[in-house]
Length: 181
Image 1 (cartoon, helix red, strand yellow):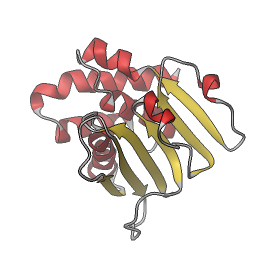
Image 2 (tube, rainbow, N blue to C red):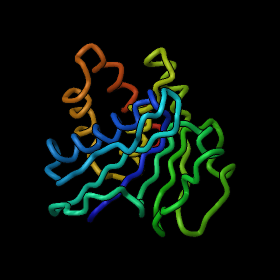
Image 3 (cartoon, rainbow, N blue to C red):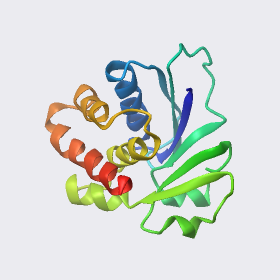
């Protein structure tokens, strides 16, 4: 049941926080074995960065980057112009993109499914700033079923400062319900 997720974002967008939220939800609430880790160097704010999450019902021994992904989450659509986010998506996988455009705009593939969600709009409306990580986390929970919505909301409380709980939980729920429709 191993699920491997790669998160594409820009420095400061919270991509690693989203990877960690998923790991928290899986390990502390849904009783999975998980890994969540970033991959970045001395990049500045706004530079492309990666985050990774692995979730399994068995102990995970692989400590390398995630090269072959069940899910690829793109927090910033502009990354599609500078990074090959499709690289390594497994057959039957999912590409989830923060975009106002419909999935068809990104081309069809017989090997994986494309979902889009305007997470920036959700973030601006609920958080008052374009930080899309919790909305995209909620979207991933909806399309993957990797963890329950309840676990995702609990992870927000376990990971983020208390003053950020309610708004971020609302962003998770809003994204989740939009993609579940």
